[in-house]
Amino acid sequence: MTVLTWSDERVEQLKKLWEAGLSASQIAAELGNVTRNAVIGKVHRLGLSGRAKSPAAAAPRQRKARPAQPMMRVARPVSRGNTALAHAFEVEVEADPVAYDNVVPMSQRLSLLELNEATCHWPVGDPSTPEFFFCGGKALPGLPYCAHHSRIAYQPVGDRRRPTVKPSHGK
Image 1 (cartoon, rainbow, N blue to C red):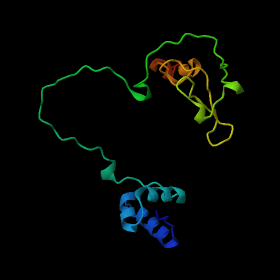
Image 2 (cartoon, rainbow, N blue to C red):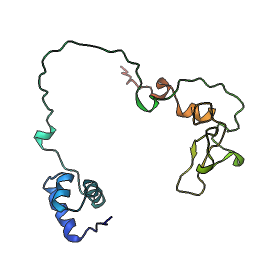
Image 3 (tube, helix red, strand yellow):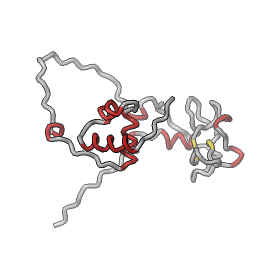
Image 4 (cartoon, rainbow, N blue to C red):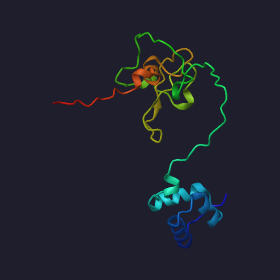
């Protein structure tokens, strides 16, 4: 793999092409030997300003009319977002060794290599530090987390939505 160094000449060419309104893909093709993502990264690191869209690009696109077709609806269960594959379950609260303030006993903490199907896979801390660990508590059957962390990970849709604040009109 060849590591690309951004010479002053290439950086100047990048800046000119960016200011001219070329896309990252077009700039990558123009510079050669560089990917679209490398161009985007360099633009970001250089702090180049985002460009205003042209009036044609900013205007909403008109949809082409399609010939009328008979409507056919298929009933499907509704599941959206990161809970689409989550199991619906109820958790009975039992004496959980994990305190509810998320303090995990030292004897229960596990490293990645120590995890198995019966242990809680909830990560705690920053993975880039030596203090990082996994909960290691008793996992619920068929789930990767203990009862406490399952309640956090699998919240019903209604509980996750923040209530909308309606403006009060005081007269």
